[in-house]
Structure formats: C-alpha cells, structure tokens
Length: 100
Image 1 (cartoon, rainbow, N blue to C red):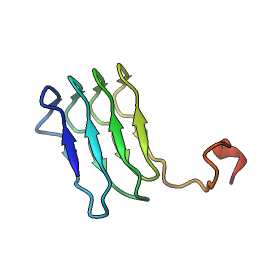
Image 2 (image 1 turned 90 degrees about the horizontal axis):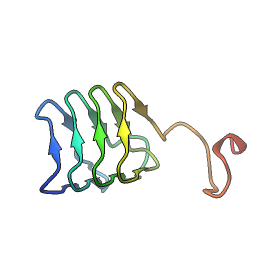
Image 3 (image 1 turned 90 degrees about the vertical axis):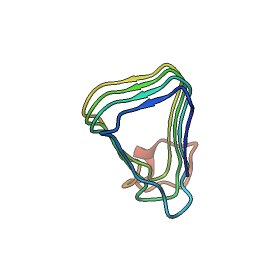
Image 4 (image 1 turned 180 degrees about the horizontal axis):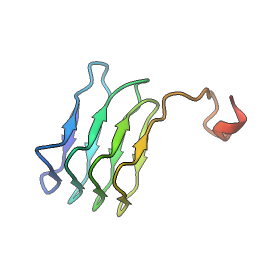
C-alpha cells in the first residue's frame, strides 16, 4: 500500500514498487522524493515511513526489509542506500552488531 500526502512531491522519474505482502510505504506532508529514487519492498515485511518536510535526493535506494522510519525534517543526500535486510536480529532493544 502506497500512501502519499497530497502536498508531497514525487518525481515522475522515481520508481516506487507496491508491495505484494502488505508493506506500507508512507510519504508525509510536504516531503519531496527526487528523480531516480528506488523504493523496493524486499527482504521482509517492514514499512517505509518518510516523515513531514523531508527531502530524498536523487539516486537513493530503499529496500524496506525490516522497516525504515525517517523522522520529520530529514534531508537525505544523493545516492544513499538503506537496506535493513541482511542482518540477523531478534531483539529490537539490542544493537544489531551484538546480534550477528
């Protein structure tokens, strides 16, 4: 399910894939997603939530995996990759590096 706030702006050159497993992709108020950004629900069933007044620069990639939450007013530089998919963890209260 893809939910985009009416005031958010998403480039027509951005590729946001919808999930077949129920992952939610939420883009908040007045946020901007630039060209050549890729959002792929892969590696888990976590949601991607981008807060209010955020800017995602071109070339960024988001694999939703175990979930990504971007707070309000966050600016993300070009060509960043977010991939919460390939680390073992079972306890959200412990650091990933402590879990394998």
